[in-house]
Amino acid sequence: MNINTVRKEFPIFQKRGAKPLAYFDNAATTQKPKAIIDAMDKFYRVGNAPVHRGVYALAESATEKYENVRDHVKDFIRAKHREEIIFTSGATASINMVVSGLAETFLREGDHILLSDMEHHAMIVPWQAAAKRKKLKLNFIPLTKDGRIDLDVFKKMLAKHKPKFVGVTHVSNVLGTVNPVREMAAAAHKIGAIVLVDAAQSAAHLPIDVRKPDCDFLAFSGHKMYGPNGIGILYGKRKLLEKLPPLMYGGHMIEQVTREKTTYAPLPDKFEGGTPPVAEVIGLGVAISFLQSVGLKTIQKHEEKLTAYALRALKDVPNISLLGPTTAKGRAPVFSFTIAGIHPHDIATLLDREGIAVRAGHHCAQILHENFSLDASVRVSLCFYNTVSEIDRLVSALSAIVKKFQ
Image 1 (cartoon, rainbow, N blue to C red):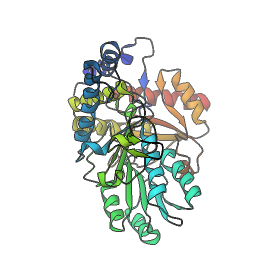
Image 2 (cartoon, rainbow, N blue to C red):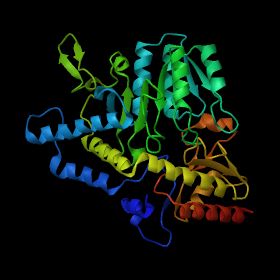
Image 3 (cartoon, rainbow, N blue to C red):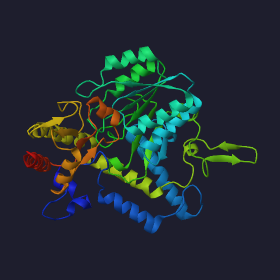
Image 4 (tube, helix red, strand yellow):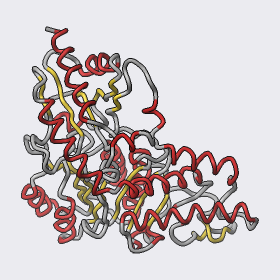
């Protein structure tokens, strides 16, 4: 992979200046290649029409493009059936759809829910609301000192609590930890639990195969994998999706409406009420094609090198404390850290003056930070368009910041 050729696909990196952008906030959102921008622009210029509603040529063409992306996503994550792919507004909406449906249909007072301490608030908060409403019991898997899930501890919690649902992130958005979701799903299924994998941080970095972890549900967002904002995916096993009630009610998701009752459309339409974001869906399809053209295994190999290099380089920064796994094995290119005596927001502000974009705060993971007795950290999250020279710039800038505060 020629990194310079790849970077030319992203208009934002063509900006010139004394301090070119080093973008290290990819766990929040990735930059967009020209192909996605052009595809969405083209749709609005010459292809805009409502989907599933018109018999005229323009509407039929828009519908075909929209539904082709569903097939593309199905193949991308190796799902069995196209109707198992639901378009949503993002991973948060996907998770909420599952939580709401399960709480209403499957769960009873006193049932246990098992999450991990490294979950994003998008997994935790919906379950807290559902637990309050349905009188469910939430349990959390603790983390090891280096920010991993101990499988033995997990299995003991399964045996103790007999949870009806297990929710786990594939990759931590703070620590970069790659969780053993295949083994976790297999163990959870042995006690009859339903499993949801949050793949928001893995879809752009690792090959996804929903049959390998054999998860019941999987959620991810387009904007974290080089696609547009406002589009996400919920994968669900057909037998479960058929039993879940819709979350959104309105046009398109119905089969028949009378004064007395409404019957719902079959999958996937039942979960896609209202006017969908057609351009965003098309953009997601192009993003997947873009990832496939580079090759996820190629991306993974390059990012593994970046991860190993960054781990070594960051350790040279004086007074730094890195969170999470200490080796590159089983780790995605996400690094959170603190520097003694300097607030994370001050670090982020000073880095910005050098053209380096990082995240500072709790990263929607306050429970995780509690594990490390922290309120906030600085997060550097890489992807395949980042370079070793950018990491060197970061380390140099951090060292200068430490010197300034001494």
